[in-house]
Image (cartoon, rainbow, N blue to C red; front, side, top):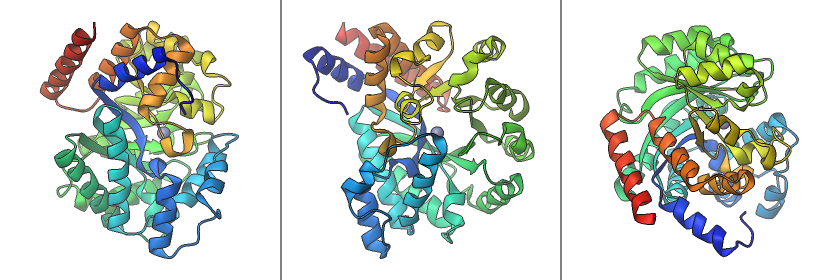
Length: 350
Ligand SMILES: [Zn+2]
């Protein structure tokens, strides 16, 4: 991904790379490339489930969200030390920088690590080392969104929050919000109403996955019951015109991930993806990569895949990049500065 490109595609890719973009839907554990997984396994004396990098990459064929999650949690087993989390974060940031990403809002799942005996401080400190280093050396800003695993109980989410809160001050430059991810079916947003209310009272920004495999109703309850500022995925919103209208009226962004949706069979063909339709109906749509090591492409690949399959115009692609900045949690002045940078690149290109 991508295979042989026409010169038009190369021109488009170069244009899209130059657009300043924010990536808002990204699980750091989902950026673990097979090569790094094997390197960390060796460093930590762990036997990977697969005999080689190639065999592991070949296993990345999924039937649905659950079949992906099984492999994803197994892969995370190699992450043990502060250095491991640093290396994971830096590897992603270098890749994002190469795609023209200027700001990232990264989800991480502490429960995936604490349940294996990795202290929550190790996760925070390692990721922060990487993200702060990237800010210094690559000039990319980042925020962290600590995410709860929705297949676990709300009590466990609450315990994770309480364990993390003493670290808030040390990571206040990064940790701005919380999210909700993992298996959506049977785990509606309202299951986490108490923990979201507590996070809201604490002043955290709130996001949640909803309407990926789950129904449009989950999008409504994520907005109305949890009070989220942004919906991760949300592609099923269009199943219910009232839910879609709610998102449009309240300008609640959707962080859409085309290659993820294709790989996990949320859509059968990218040509049938509703991203363009949602955008044209007035939803604040953004393009993101979700778990790029598993789904065959980073953010630029997702822009390209969407652009080619859905015949998005240059103006629409520019709007999508602008939406990513607009939908971020950056302060207004920083958003405006990035939007000006974007406008300048577009002027220079025309
Ligand atoms: Zn996701």
